[in-house]
Amino acid sequence: MKNIYKEDDGKYAGMIEDLKNLPKVETPENFEYNLMTRIQNKNFGDSKIKDPAFNWIKFLTPSAVVVTAVILLFIFIPSNQQTDNQFSKFDNKIVNNSIADNKNDASGDIINQGKPPISNGAKSLAETSKSSANTDNSVKNVNPRIPFGYSRSVSLDDYITGSNHQNNLQRGNVVNSGNSETPFDGFFLVEKPDPNLLMKERARIDSVKNAKAKADSLKKVQK
Amino acid sequence: MNKTLTELKDEELIKEFQDNNTIQAYEILVKRYKDPLMNFVYRFVGDRDACTDIVQETMIKFFLNKDSYRSFAKFSTWIYTIAGNLAKNELKRRRRRTIFSISGNDDDKTPQIEDKMFHSPEKIADGTIRNEIIERALLKVKPVYREVVILRDIQDLSYEEIAEITGLATGTVKSRINRGRAQLQKLLKHIYKD
Image 1: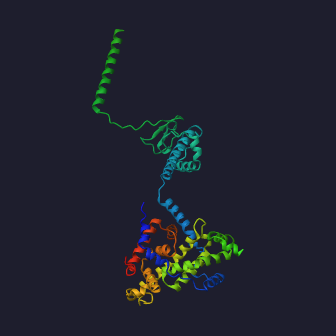
Image 2: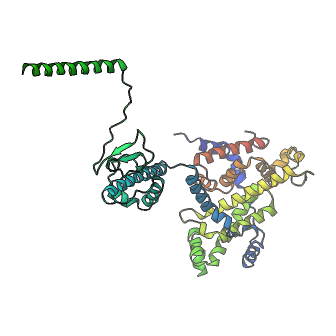
Image 3: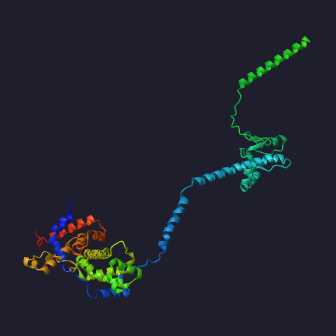
């Protein structure tokens, strides 16, 4: 491989020779003395290495940035898990309330038959606070499958015996009886009967009754 | 002990200075390198007083930062790097001073008339004047080329050493030396006609 730089050395040989022969410049005689004096006196001028002073701002800035970032993350980024938990807590609370209500209602039938029932509002408030205080107990003791609350339910046993004092009895209230669990059967539509159909049914029943009366009278005659 | 120290190589001396803080080792290194550095910086900057200050600064930096030298590098390249950086800083400072100078201090400028002065063949034949012309022409070469030309053709360092000092690839060093030489020869065309 051709070395172009070697060739260039030859091309500039005269000039390179002159450059090499330029007079050598030497330091002044007192150079070393001055240098050692400066070193002994520690007169380093600009060459002195400056120890960086401890700066609180520089020291705290990175940690402050990290802390701020974490705080902002907590504030501005909504946590799905957190909201889910909140909702689940809310749901649990409602379910537990209704369960507790139902349990009290059911157990009240058996244990506290003689006692007058507590009014709806007071009872529900008391039960809400009770259930929120003892959520775990209510969850353990009560079957969570019962889907209705005290305020919307009527104990059939109480109703029959006359000890039910609920004043908000409505057609849509859920009826509960005894200790058995009541499965939820769904919703039913109320249909008005057709008057023509009723007339036909009545006529048919009347004709059957008439036929039966005639048959009885014929039997009596034969006897 | 001193006799032994003078026989040591540069790298051994700086190790002695680093390990035992032997000031004699430092003085020997200063003795060895003060003149080569002075010559290099003078050819680069072109001002004797400034050059003395730069070499002094180089030696002070060497004294203060002795531990930053690593044994895998040659001592000569390390100290040339320090001196070269200081010389470049000085040139930058001068350029800035020239740009921002409102009055335009004429002392800092090289007189243009003198540069274009006609030199008779007799004068050129005179070695002293010839050297003076070459020195002035060298100071007109671009600093990036001038530095490598000085290190190669005046200080007689190898391409590898120059590459280490300047932090450039060897190929870049070679091409820069070539360009610097070409620039210099162009400036000195009345001397080197062929």
